[in-house]
Amino acid sequence: MKRKLLATVAAIGLLSFSMPAYADLGIRLIQGADTVTILDGGVGDANPVAGVVSFIGSIGNYAVNVTTGAGFPLVGSPTSPDIDLNSLDVTSSGPGGRLRLYVSQTDFATSGPVTFNSQIGGTTQATSVAGSTFYNHNNQLFSTQTPLANFSFDASPFAASANNQVTTSPLYSLTELVDIRSAPYSPKTTSLDAQLTGVPVPEPTSLALFGTALVGLGLLSRRRRNA
Image (cartoon, rainbow, N blue to C red; front, side, top):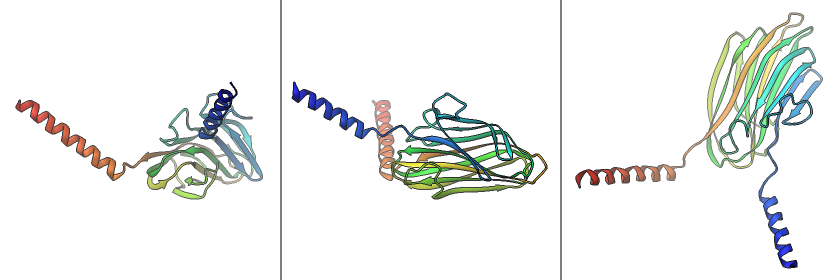
């Protein structure tokens, strides 16, 4: 009986060790000396759905109708990276200044080359809008360690897209950052959507096996027609 109990405890221990804690997904807003950080399902999250974090309110000199970050399990997965940052009617007031918006998620688990696509689009009355995406091999939330893509706009509407290939290893994090700058004492409104996705690049061996399988299917089909 005791041996069975010890075996069960050991199995539970191994299972716990092999299954990492659920990934962190969060958004962060920084304006002047004010910082708001909200994790999925945490204090301040206005959306109860897992895989979505929303902020509604004001920070510093900006009123935010809604800013939302999305990741897995709602979109993408640990092996199919996908994070999204959406802000609707972010409006400056008074001195205006700089507002930074982040979305970040940890525990992506691809291994090998991944092609990351960074894209952003929206409308703005602000002086400028900039977007950046980042990869972090230390799996840290909101890290800007390794830049993937950078965009900068001073006109509206705006849109851009870029691809970058990175050799990944689990576990790692991804981050999107949008930087809005507005002139003082002239309310300016910005709405935008930014997305970062990743597609694993097939290894040469996999491509060769796939090609061989296609050739085999072709030969089999030809034999059947000739029979």
